[in-house]
Amino acid sequence: MSAVGTLAGAVFAMVAIIATMVLALRDRDRSNKLREEDQRQAARDRADSDQRLREEREAADRRLREEREAADRRQVRDWQAENAIALLHRIADLHPHLAFLATHLPAFDRLDLVVGEDLRGAVGSLQRGAHSEALALGSPVGTVLYRNLVHMVMSLEPTVREALDRLPSDAERAEAWAVGKVRLETDLRRYSRYVRLWLCELIEKGEILSEPQQAQTAVGDLPHLGGVWPPRSPWTPQVPPPGWSEDTDLDPADPQFRAAL
Image 1 (cartoon, rainbow, N blue to C red):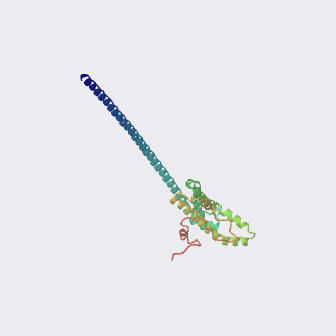
Image 2 (cartoon, helix red, strand yellow):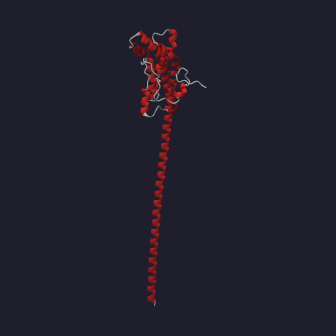
Image 3 (cartoon, helix red, strand yellow):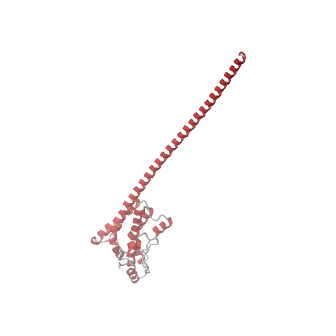
């Protein structure tokens, strides 16, 4: 019996040792799995944190770029408005002289002092605008429109005189001029209004006619100053600027002026 008891005790001890080893291994596996899961979770948390940090940095960079771009756009708009307003003043200074320009065709170097000083000053101011503010508008269309007006004023006398000289007799020249100078004044007044209103559009919106085809039409749409004969209708723009009709009602000399009722 003693031997059997000893053997049974040994077997029991062996079973206990094996059970303890199995439990220890299981606990170690569980611990390893938990540790690995903790490590994976920590890695995921770090990745998520890094991703959020990258996104926050990208968002901050994007906001900074947008703020800088907005500031640049505001600066450009400020420059455009400043230069366009200066050109509007130059056009306004010329406006009182348009009738004289159209009906007398003055040669600026032959004007007497009394008549010519203010006119020369207004025309000189208009010319200076073509070499200064018109080039800084940030709008190729606006630049061309203003320079077209300057060119029209400066070439008015030689253009019309050449057209009249092509007529065969003094009587025909006199008849052509009697009719043509009225239309010429209207054309000048309308084209100066045309340029002025497009400059106002530039101030308001930062651009003039974003569609290339319409922009090309606008800059190429010019009165034919040399066509004093035969008589024809006054020039009307193919693409009227915003406010064209309303502004016409402020010019009693225009054939389309409508009296207030």
